[in-house]
Image: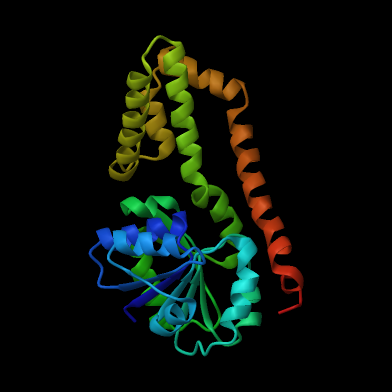
Length: 275
């Protein structure tokens, strides 16, 4: 199974295809998008093939559904007219349960995936959920694909909205903190270039420490936080102003939004017992 087709050529598809290209994987990649110029551009950039909807379905052993959640139902209706036996379908759309896919594409092997855009630099944290018709071999194939893009964690589907909140949307949280640190640095007298450079490089260093240092996150933080020092002063402000509660509320909002999307985009198939 070395022919992989992407339906949808948006940001996440771009990140995944770029990651596969950078990992020197042996996959032959096909791309389709309703905006043909987007598929053409992506295919040209990463030595893939831009093709029609019918071609991407017929040519691919593995189909990655990389369209927006609001477009999934229409896409599944189109796919239902094709013979999908022996194909592996991987969906990266948030907020749509496996039972929706399996009810509209009965008997089809579906893996629900939640990567993030760090797949573009081979540092994605991807969570995968195994559908009921996925064979052990297909599970290994999905694991291999996402391992090319970074780390993989298989979870039960009832945890996927939490995964979305933590790692799926997570890169944006760190970008926001980096952005805000740079803005604060400018207010303290740094130039925009200096503040941006310092904030970015600090985040990169922290990421490397988290990977290479075996101490817990709490221990790493404590090692930087001398009593009554500068870091302690900043951390105290964060905690006294409710940062822990803000983070908890923010991730809960993301998870709840994913849950809401199950109803919005799945229609009757999202209701209990409809499977």
